[in-house]
Length: 267
Image (tube, rainbow, N blue to C red; front, side, top):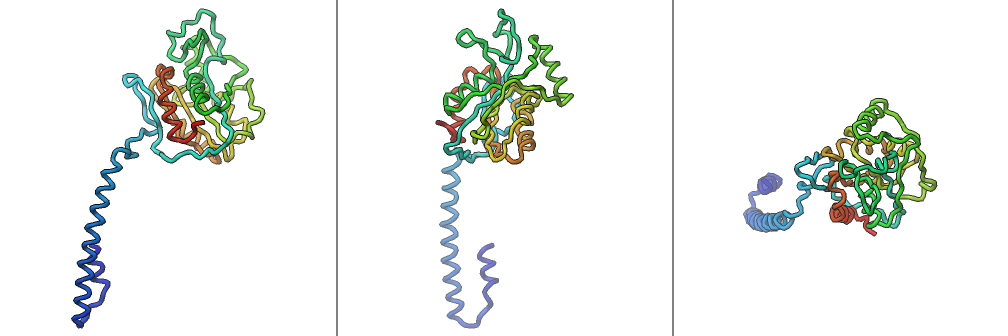
């Protein structure tokens, strides 16, 4: 097709020398085209192993059978955080629920015992991020505690969602202006962020900050929460996030590090 266009672009001439010149030009162009095609094919084969189409989209649902953590988003661009101060803010049941002393962490998919202390799955991932980035941990806490019983908690979370409530927070970041990068962690509650996370987002100005979400879940991944963050914080840069099946959180250190290396936020 390219050769045809070039022929049509050159007017017909009676001069034999012009015809000879044109013929030589066409032959040369065909040789160059063949060389270019060969190089292109070789390049495609060389990058096949890093095809970005293999990346998992942020709304992928991780089934219970897969029972593994995964990177999210097809965006492979690195997050340029430079030397900006990092905050790791997260919401979890622990710290927001009055658990009894004899709570059986093994019976709950969202709780773990680490060194004899009750720890939420989201908090576990937050701690892993802190180890890799040297950022500062901040737990989002509410004035009113959440139900101890899991079934009651499920109903309570649904009620908050239906009412679009904004629970009053008891913990606050005094120097938010100092942080250029904010990791935001939360469990997936009813395919959304807990309403306490919205209270956190409403409290501060995130203009110009890089927001990096991470989520623990029971099979629904991020659901639509990343898109919600992009809409809720239009003046912020929402970077590639990380989601992990709740019961896999304790073994996610390697996946967390791989994700942080990919977005270039390691210490």
